[in-house]
Image 1 (cartoon, one colour):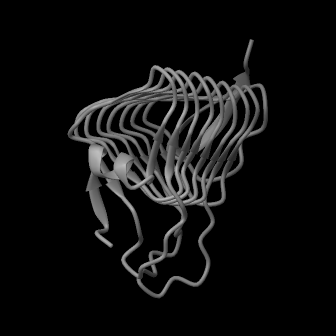
Image 2 (image 1 turned 60 degrees about the vertical axis):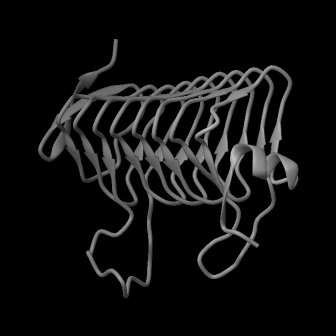
Length: 200
C-alpha cells in the first residue's frame, strides 16, 4: 500500500474520515504507515474542522471538531487534538502528541514526541520543545517530553527542555529557556527561566 495519499485517495480507501462540514484542502497528504510499515488506522477529522493547503497528516490521527490547522503543518502518527483548537502555519508536531481543547499553537513551533498539552494552553511562535536532553540521537535510551498544564502561556521564541512541566496558569516570558519545572500561577522568564512573581 502507498504510504502517502492525496485527500481524495485517502477518502476512497477509508483512510481519511471527514466529519460533517469539515474542509480539507486538496493538497493535503495522508501518510498511511510509518517507514517500518506500521499502520495505526485512519485519520479521523471532526465536524467543522478546516485543514489548509500543504498539511501532512499521519496514520492514527484523531482531530476534533471546529479545529483550524494552518498551511504547511506536518504531523506524525497518533496525534490527538481536542475541539476548538488552532494550529497556525508551519507547525511541526511529532508522534503521539496529545493536545487539549481550546489550545492555540502559533507559527513555526516544534512540538516533540509524546508531549501533553492540556486545555486552554497558548504557545507562541517559534517555540521549541525538546525530549532528548543529552543529545544522544540516534542512540537515545530515554525520551522525556515536556508537559503543559491547563491554562499556561508560553511566550514566543522560548525553548522548553525535556521533562519540564509548566504549571497550571503559569506564564513564561518570550525568549525564555525553561530548564526546570515551573509551578502553577506564576510568571517566569529568563535564560534559564526563574520564577519572578505570582501571576495576578
